[in-house]
Image 1: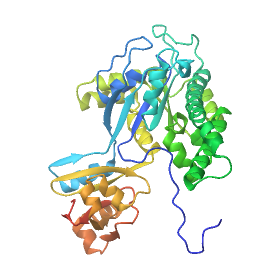
Image 2: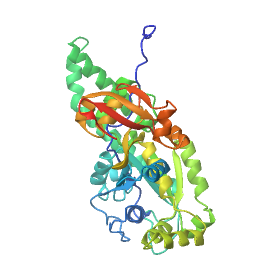
Image 3: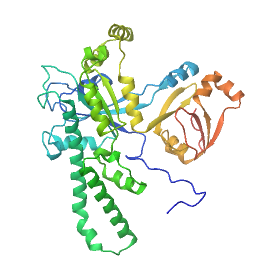
Image 4: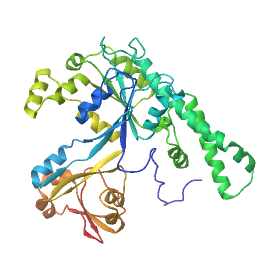
Amino acid sequence: MAPKKGAPAEEKLQLGRPGNNLKIGVVGLPNVGKSTFFNAITNSAVAAENYPFCTIDPEESRVAVPDERLDWMNEKYKPAGKTPAFLTVIDIAGLVKGAAEGAGLGNAFLSHISAVDGIFHMIRAFTDPDVVHVEGEMDPARDLEIIHNELRLKDVAMLNKYIDLNQRVIDRMGGGGSVEDKKKKDEFAIVLRVRDWVAKGNDVRKGEWSNKDIEVINAQSLLTAKPVTYLVNVSEKDYARKKNKYLLPIKKWIDENNPGDKLIPFSGVFESNLAALPDAAQRKAYTEEMKVESAFPKIITTGYDSLNLMHFFTAGEKEVRAWTCRKGAKMTDAARSIHNDIADSLIQVDVMKFDELKAAGGEAELKAAGRLLTRSKDAIIEDGDIVYFRSGMGRAKK
């Protein structure tokens, strides 16, 4: 049925759990460089031995999301503190063929993937006789197929388990039943459709789903519903010369199977060497010598964006800070990132647009130009907004 004339359009639901503290997992075959990547990006100490299952428990770390706007505000306000937005990264041990059926330590690792909200899918595109390839010969397209097949097989198994548990109950309901019975039958029908879609070799995230479908899908925590960013690990030499013979077939596979997904080449060796240097001057000298920059800023911001996250700012003499919220969030949802009490008693919001603030030269000049905006608590917050929440608690954040 078409919506009534003048009625507001239904808000499109998003795949994935709601929330601002979302996590992204690093996934791939053993020995593709996941732990080396994780060590470098977080400066942590995860074991990176040449052994397929050296990372048994997923390691977790928060990495700062780079943003030049925050740097500019830090220079302008000269606050006592500066706090960036963060992306939580999880290092998940390698999957092998047959993981969905328990091969290797597959069931445990797949459950770790179920607990994250997005995926960095890492592909090996370097040769090294000292680092064995779990499948023997190098074949990145085959490696991509293995991981995607294992995720899909696990989804099919989870959906079949739901179907097996509920089939008899649904059959007993027949054609009639209560409102609650109809709801259960609708949900069961959706699960059947999703199972058939995945069983045909499709990822859930690539389907066209209604809001009712998405509500059911989100309750299942399906692996192929999660956004994917592909990270291609090349040798330091190839990264410096910006050439690698495997990049084209990898790009071709992604375009054919998951068009629109992002691919980012990087070198685990280069990033590891760079992270090991003790100060900024030496790191700058190393990048100048190699004539390349770190890929980590692009990787972090792409992963953050893939989770449909953005950030807004609060700024003042005490602190400038980037806060995380989902794209399309209302002011109340954004305020909840700071404190539930602020959101619950929110009255209105003072908003400065970053580009206007920078162009004006400062907050006083912006206000003098009449560009300090007032928004209702139900207004949509936009990426880069600098906000002052006015709530029953007083001027909640500055």
